[in-house]
Image (tube, rainbow, N blue to C red; front, side, top):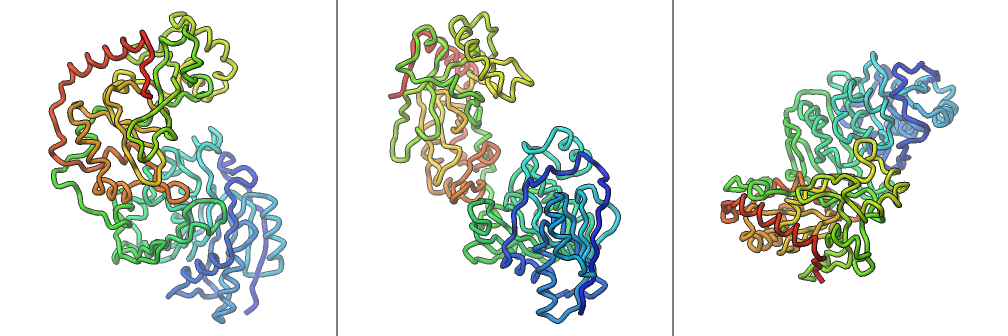
Length: 490
C-alpha cells in the first residue's frame, strides 16, 4: 500500500475568480478532519482507482486525513486531488506530499475548474463574504453560479461547484457555517440540495474553530435522488429525521421542531404598515448628537432617536438623551442643501467624513445610507433590538422616536391594536416561534430580521381595519409639531 503522488500548476481559466491571497482560509482541526473522512467513506470505502477531490486544500489536512484513514483500515490509498489557489499554501502542500504517488496538488482556482468529475469530495471551503470580493469577481460569479445571489458568501459557490464535479452516486462531506440552512441568500443552494440525497446534517461544537464563531456544520451529501430523510444532529446531541425542502425554504423550523403554521394564516406583515430596520446613516457620529448639547439652530431638524443598547430588559419606558439630525422633509424626501440652512452648513463642515461612505457612489453626499420614510416611522409603533439574547418589544406610543439601525420598528395599521400587539409579541408563544425561526448571532444570541418577523403568525383578533387616510394625516401633524420643538422620551 504505497501512495502515489505528483504536483503541478495549472493555468487559471477565469482570472476574476481567483480569490486574493489568504482570504477565507480557516485551518481544520485533525479531530474534525478524521470525523469527516470517516463519514466520507462510511459504508462505501474507496478503492485504489477511486478519486477524491479536496477543493481549497490548504496545507493538506484532509489529504493527510484520508491517508490516515486508509492506513487504519488497511485500504489502498485512492487518487487524491488537492486544489489550492494561494501560492504559499500550495507550495507547503506540494512539498509535504512530494513523492507520494497517489496525491496530486495543483495551484489553481477551484471555482474556474471544469471537466473531470470525482467519486468523493471533502473539505472546508473558504468563508469569504461578498464585501471582501471585488466588483469584477462578483459580476463574474453571478454569471457562472446559481448560488451567487444576494449578499452571497464564497463557500456557497464552492458547495455548488463541488456538487457539479461529483460523480453520480458519489459522496460529498463539507464543513461550513450553518447559515446556509436558513438564510435567504442560500435559498438557491438549498434548492440544489433538495434534489439530492442529503444524508446527514451535523451541527458541531461552536468552538471548533476557536474564537471564530461560525456555528460549524458538517453536511454529508450523496449524489443520488432524494429518498430517505436527512438525519439532523443538533449540538445538544438530539437527533431527528427531516426532509430537505425542495423549494429552498429555511430548515430552522424543522431543526427546532416548530412546523405548525398559524391556524388563521395571518402574519405580522398582514396587520402592519411597516416591519423594518431603523435608519442607517452611515455616519452616526455626524448625524447623532446629544440632545442637551445640540445647537438651537439645528433643533428643527432633530428627532429623538434610540439605539439597541437603550432598549433595556425590565425597563418599560424607552429613555434617550440623543437626537438624530434628519436632512429629509415631512414626506421623507431628501431636501436640497440650500433648504437645510444651519443643518446644511453643519453637514458641509463634515463633508470629508460623509463623502468617505460607500453610499455616496449612488446618492447625494449628505444623504443617509438608507432612506428615511418619516411618514411611516413617526407613528405609534413597537421597537425591538436587532440582536438579543431574548426578544423583547417596547412601545413608542406617541410615535416620536426615529430608531437607529440597531433597532427594528413595527408599525401596526391601526394604532388601537398597539397594546394587544405588544402583549402578543412579548408572549411565550411568540418567543418560541422566534427562537425556532430567527438566525443565531454570536454567543447564542438571536438576530431579528424584518424578513423573518414579517412571517410571524399572529392571532386573528389583531387584524383591525386600518383608517389609512386618518393615520397619514395624524402622522403629518406629528412631524410638523416636532419641528417646532424637540419631543423627548425621558
